[in-house]
Image (tube, rainbow, N blue to C red; front, side):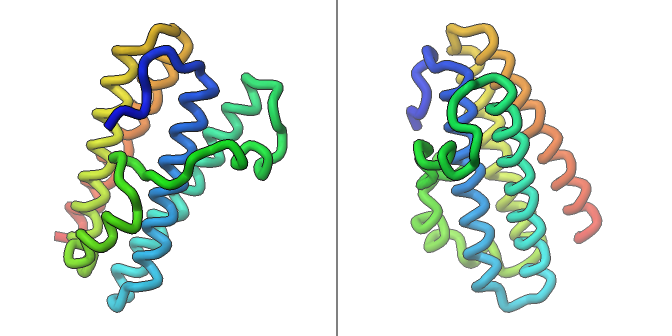
Length: 160
């Protein structure tokens, strides 16, 4: 997946990350609506809310460094939100992974796979970045993905 070339600005990276978070939120929200098991539905709802929190943090970061649009709607107007963490298209991945989303353990394992791919993406592009501030932001995002993986691992331990 080639989303970044290495010469993006910090705001470009924030916009990309925001779009990926929204794509994943949409994915979890759609899966939530399709869930038959109440435990699975609750977990998917929680994961969607977490993605909303990630988006808010990214928007707040954007506001702190850029003099561009200061309202969320204007900010989102220029963001591609058709992909999700891992670089997948939400609709395509949904069709391929419905069986994985039928149990709480399956949902957690699936979420861990996506977080690991996001971690890898941010680490690789941090190494490629030509802008120090962007590189630092990508490493910070990678650290957040590590924390997400840890939290999901702890939740998995509780479920098995």
